[in-house]
Length: 116
Image (cartoon, rainbow, N blue to C red; front, side, top):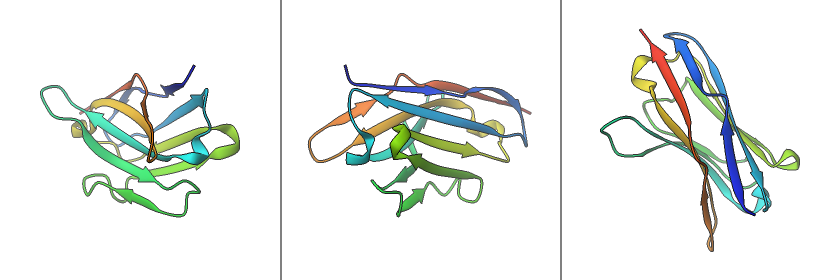
């Protein structure tokens, strides 16, 4: 059974940090570009960060550049999102996505809430 399971979300004060993890099972993430998306209440889902299959290429939304870092550990079948200097506007459900030419998989999401 193919699954992506996110963890690491929670409640944090503004200026704090969280590290999200996304564990894949039932498939090998090394064959996929991995991305983190987020969706705030009443807003559309937006791309936060992406990383290529072997980690050599990364991209970020302008709103998180310099604060968030995406990384991956293919042997552990896991992708991470280190979030520093968090702001209240970062509050959202964060979703992990795996995509290649043939398939796309989504996790169930993890809630991140940043208090001011």
